[in-house]
Amino acid sequence: MSDKIIPIIMAGGMGTRLWPLSRAQAPKQFLELLGGKTLFQRTLERVSDGELYTAPIVLTNAEFRFLVAEQARLIDHPLAKIMLEPVVRNTAPALAVAALAVEREYGEGAVMQVLASDHEIAANAVYFDCVAKAREAAKAGRLVTFGITPSEPATGYGYIEAGEGLGGGAFAVKQFIEKPDRKKAEALLAAGGHLWNSGMFMLPVGPFLKELRRLAPAVLEAAARSLEAAKHDLDFERLDPETFATAPDISIDYAVFEKTPIAAVVPSPIDWSDLGSWDSVWKLGARDEQGNVSDGRTTLLDTQNSLVLSKEIHVAVQGLSDVAVIASEDAVYVGRMEDSQNVGKLVKYLASKEETAALTETHRTSYRPWGGYTSVLNGDRFQVKRLFVKPGKRLSLQKHHHRSEHWIVVRGTAEVTIGDRTIPLRENESIYIPQGEVHRLSNPGKILLELIEVQTGSYLGEDDIIRIEDEFGRQ
Image (cartoon, rainbow, N blue to C red):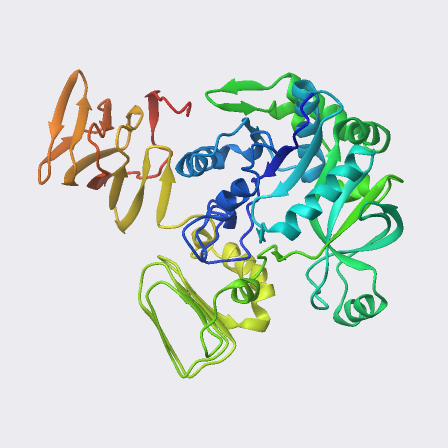
């Protein structure tokens, strides 16, 4: 058993509430919103104290496994393991799997802290004081949640009513309250003793599993079977898809916390945001004297209390107030700040239309474990991409049934395998890959390799790839 806290980081969310920057395949936890690090990386940094924490366990899905590994590598943060959920089944099955894995590794006396990877938190002395209080309550056998001290009558969060004091800064949970309307939220604040439900927990493994067994046996059984039949794939642990899919789709709040008599809450007066809307990003940003937050290539004139972000194009905003203007590579969102909680409604509408559905799924730039590519131009029977390959990385040995490819090196040095030949390519040199030919692209150099790829053929979808050999375990 370890005396340290075992961090459990939930990184599988596919939310699009920060569209157009967040997409189903590029969720907010992996984005650099305001600064040089992603929310996932900042979450890792909060558990970097080796005296307090073990290396974290990350729960995510197969689509994000290389993003998780690469973003941890970029900040040199070790991970204990990356567990892959085969289907979306909410937080109760995920935390059941995590608890079983921790029990197997550290014993039932271990304590685990559950953290969302897409929250922004000021990790200062006040925060770690709350962590210490929650840890002590967990050691005493309580299932602990962190209740954020509310700063306004917010309607976007659930609330927790604190009951009797348990000593050491923890309180029994009197009740959970669903997201209220404005009038009820104001009444809760006026009454006192009500806290925002943060979705962060400190859980003693033994008591937590006991309550799962009592209150949600189907969840625990599916979790146990999927973990027992899990497959190891490189640095990842793939939960068994058939057994995990039998788990009820239920949150840990509904499955356990709203029913258990041993729930506790630690009031946490910390700087916290779930960054669930563009107005929450504006509130956290560094505002200028006009109350604006801007990032990227932007110009603001006669504009007040607005959020203007651009990842590529130059955005100029004039004569507006209280608006959010967000530009990605391929889409621009403009809306009143007060409506930013409802971006999800717009995303659903876009997803329902064939001509705009792709805008909710992926960006023009897609990232892969070897680098990635940007879509430059699409036409009838052709498309143009910019490929970028990281030093020392290589793509899978592959072939395509329906397309041929032309590669032109614009930066760096490439090593191209075609059939049984290996050919070096330098800047301004090109090569042709015939349809059906086995081939591979590698970067043997020390700088980023960049190429222009022109594809031609009857079908140009990404699924026209037959992988013969792949060091990343993809099919």
